Amino acid sequence: METKRDRLEVRALPGYPEEIGCWLWAMEDVRSKLLNKIGDLTQAELDAQIDGYPTTIGALLYHIARVEAGWLYFDILQANGFGADIEPWLRDEERDEQGMLSHETGESLDRYMERLAVVRRDFLNRFKAIDSEDWRRIRVLPDEYDVTPEWAVYHLLEHEAHHRGQIYRMIGQLRRRT
Image (cartoon, rainbow, N blue to C red; front, side, top):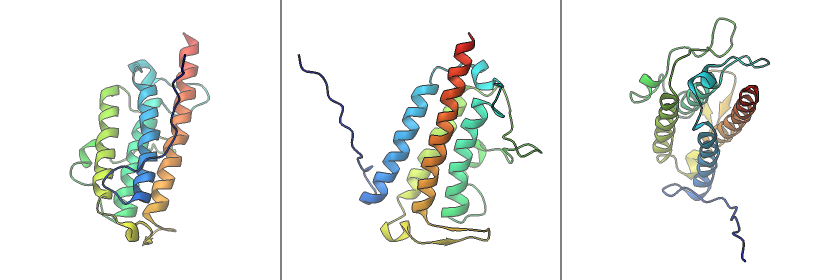
């Protein structure tokens, strides 16, 4: 009996220069694993305050989308605000007075997942205008750093993978309680 072998490889997303497409494929891979893990979360799990965590799963899902949109619009595109299609999905502030991620409750899993999808679709669409030269062009920002789209994508991969790990641990902790 022959066993099925996994094929582990990076494949560039079509429609982008190869190097950029590979990085964007990695972003999609990280996202797909997150979506698979959260697909059956209950409202109580999304909104739960868990000992040892200063936030909720829902707040982390919102934060992932907001940070992705922020890096795209403010750092890569150097815009003054979010695009018209993105603005309705994001509140003005995601942090409370103490700098912690805000814990708005009651938002459905479908809404969180739709926000993640809308932001990612916009990100990928806007990246079609970035060629190999622009990929490494430094954006000089008024803040304390300058950045390339390449580094921003690397950071977004790291950021989402980090929070995905937190969410996995939080889910495990919640489900061990029951």
